Length: 169
Image 1 (tube, rainbow, N blue to C red):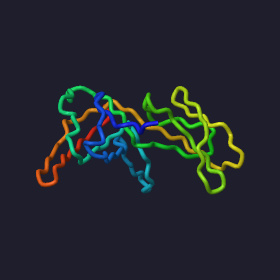
Image 2: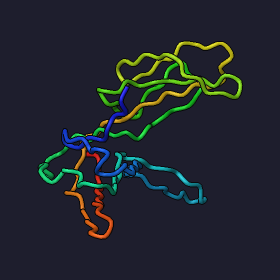
Image 3: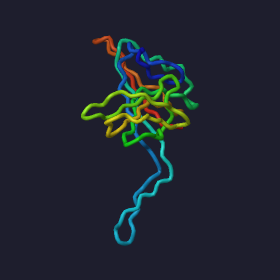
Image 4: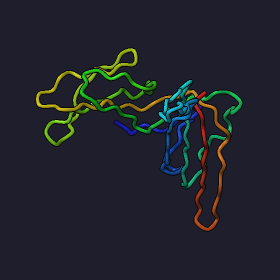
C-alpha cells in the first residue's frame, strides 16, 4: 500500500516538494484558576487543534491556487494514538477517510499489529491472549484555516522551502 500524502484543499503535497515536517498540538480556552487556599482548578471552555507543515525540496508545494479565505480540508499523515487497557477507544478526532484506523497490542515486551473495527468514532479491538495494553492509531482529517505558505528558493542548492501554519476551523 502506498504511503498516504498530506493533502490541503484536495492538493497532495508530493515528495519532490520535500518530505514534510508536521506538527499538531492543542489550542483552547482553558486556564487554571486558584482557589482561596491555593488549590488549582482547571476550567476548560473549548479545545481545537493547530499545527504547522514545512518542507524543502526540488519543487514548490503547489498550494498557491487554494482559496485561503475559506476553511480547507487538511488530511494529515501525523499518527495520533491512544493507549490503554481497551477494548474500545473513542478517537479524539476524525480519521482520514482514505486510511482506516489500525491497532496494536502489547504482548510481553512487543507491540504486535492486531485487527480492529471502527464505527461512529470508536475503535474496537478484539481481546488478544497475553496482551497487557492496546493502542488505537489513526491519521486525522481537519477542517482548517490557513494562510498561503511562505516560500523560499535557493539558486545555490536548487531547492524550494515552504511552511504554513493552520488552525482548526
